[in-house]
Length: 287
Image 1 (spheres, helix red, strand yellow):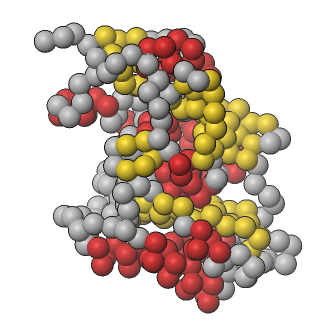
Image 2 (cartoon, one colour; image 1 turned 180 degrees about the vertical axis):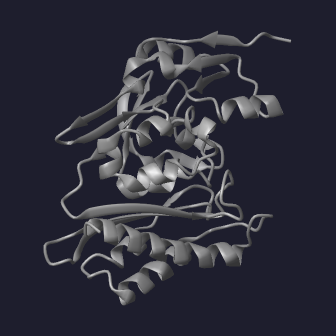
């Protein structure tokens, strides 16, 4: 049996070099990778621990927005007062992942790149309009979060590429975001449906921009432009919320499994999207 190599690079270039090797896998928090290795579904030849790279461990705020390293743990992000105040929906999504111990290790980058359709943080990241900086053999590039996952366990990242950080642009005044999910149990369960909504209001209380993300209702987390369009130009009244719910349900491409049926997931997606929009609206109004 071939021994597994372990590497802990301290620079992005070194990480790219090691991740370009055949059979290399990135380790950020390890809460998914180690479980997969123990279960035998993954056996990397090289484990590349990217937590030793300074750029991946930072949370920086500028007038333009927040830049959050891909290896920052969810618990750390939740304890960052300024980030939590600006993006409470992202924080509450991450606080639903696993246990307290898991949240102390699991990272934004890892939760995204594990590419689970039911990942809690991803719909919230999509709703927030987060963008990724990706490093690879060809240098750095940027991509929207919704373009990273392409299917269950599959991403658009090329060999040797990994996510360095996430950028959250400073939102306009009177903006709020929220994330909600449905699970059979209240703790440490996988989402049957997840919904994230971010919306902005003008001085008259009308919606000027919105983004809606759904999880666990398709092979990957979805950006739902039609649901967002139902809110823009309205006061986010009952009629607009009903259209939002209908558009969210219409976007679903779910499966039947032991956690939920196609019919159930489709219905619940609309209900959760509406409730998340109401919560985001309250935050946008400063309530």
